[in-house]
Length: 287
Ligand code: SAM
Image (cartoon, rainbow, N blue to C red; front, side, top):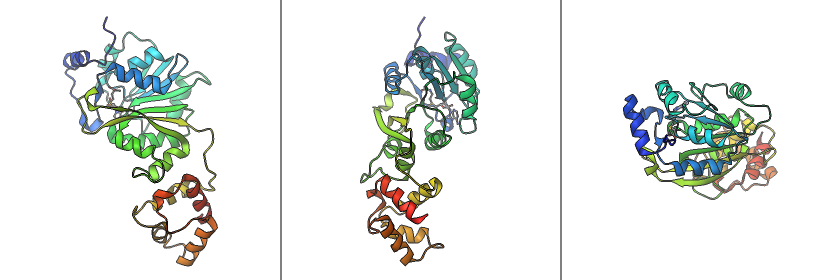
């Protein structure tokens, strides 16, 4: 029996068999290349001990590969129309559980507790729906889930922003937010041709491995993230400019200058030149 769902022939056969039509609004671009999937699984470091979580199994292309390489797979899918198809495509595997829920509304903590063994290393691996990439990743980071790593196919541009270093065009508040929780790097660039239908944007696989501890010490995380975002408010302007605007109801200009001195940061610099450590110093001086 042909085992691989992720080929153009098999994907088309299942589409026809069930009369399935893609919903663009749900970011449905299915992978039709087994090599790419095996590469993603390798980059994710999935082994027979791994508990794998997938978001958006679609027709099961990646789910199948995860079932082959991992101990168990739990996949969350929003589109109920895929239930009959997945029952068919994944019928050979007994280590997969598909949950029909919106990942943004799901209680991931409860799902993990119910579905995996105590202490099992859990990795999230997915080809994400591009219309909600950032909200999904931020939710996964901020929910403090017991995950080892996140390995996801996303838009190349977003992958670059999340993994960017200071003094690059892609560096911004998203880089800081993601890198506060994880070590981030682009593991793979993927051509449009491996998808059906082909998306309009280029794709990349982003690998995020969770840190044991935050890389910087901040007194108030919420204020830290908020202030970083304000620092990049007007990218081309100086920190001083952005801070005067942000703290308009709180500090006058002299007070702002004083706090820059406390943090030992030149207010004439631009946000894109600051390291996370420097942002932390600034946040602690201003909070
Ligand atoms: N994993 C499949 C593959 O690689 O061929 C499909 C990937 S496709 C890019 C994204 C999948 O996410 C679709 O199946 C879509 O229905 C599903 N999806 C979209 N929004 C979702 C949400 N909020 N929660 C869970 N799944 C979602």
